[in-house]
Image (cartoon, rainbow, N blue to C red; front, side, top):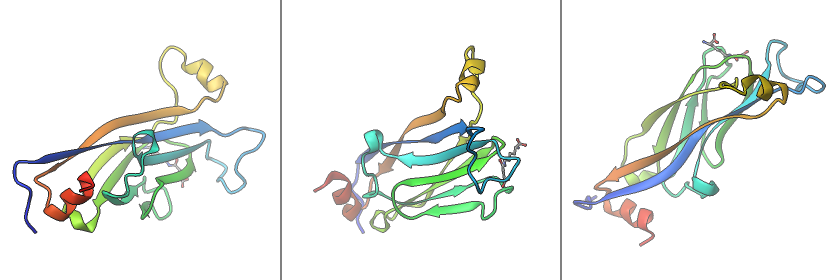
Length: 154
Ligand code: SLL
């Protein structure tokens, strides 16, 4: 597989988390008693663009306190929905489509459950969703030809 020399292809995406305290009136029935929040961690395209033409699967590695803490998501939406009580670092491993010949890449995300800053108390009061997300660009340097075709729709 020949590489396309001198070419770099950039693809933007967003990764991060959203969290919200349980509604005290209706906690999820299956949530352990010490859990306080529901949350999700995700990798997605800008404006929810489908990125599965270059992203094959995503492996999320949660804290060891979770049962089966390594969660592999093979198709969009690339996300894990969970409940819990604590914040921790989530390892996110991106696997690219087989045509890419690219090795997986690892990202880290700090799961945020609690609002911070001047209005944190008010946000807690209103049970506002705590969003923590990053815009990122993956760079494919000198992609192999079949992958270059896929990336550029050629
Ligand atoms: C802390 N270092 O002590 C962190 C660890 C772990 C979070 C947070 C629930 C797991 C479960 C959960 O929220 N774990 O009950 O299955 O704050």
